[in-house]
Length: 103
Image (cartoon, rainbow, N blue to C red; front, side, top):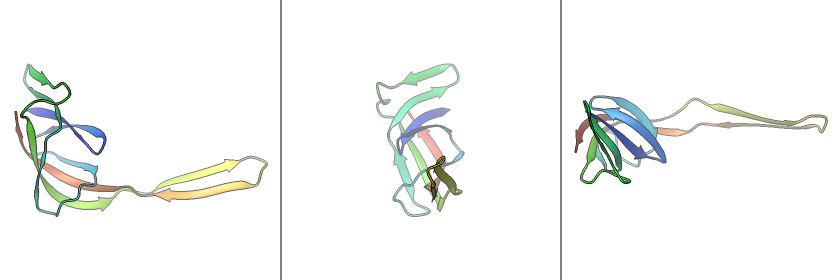
């Protein structure tokens, strides 16, 4: 069984037992969270598509860790104008493990 969930403005295809990194969620490490924005649930040939979400479907996950991604370097330059700008960005993430998908 798999599902497509929406969290942090992004969509993820998940299955039970998977570990994924999502946008930061304000939850303690080791706690259980429930993701209720389930856009699609599929098992074998049968697929339920929500309009926009599947009614009554939830995904239960456990928070494993919080962290920060690798640095993305930003460099802006205008030729012949003596303009250069260096910048960096590290996005926060929450690593979760999918425990159960209930439709």
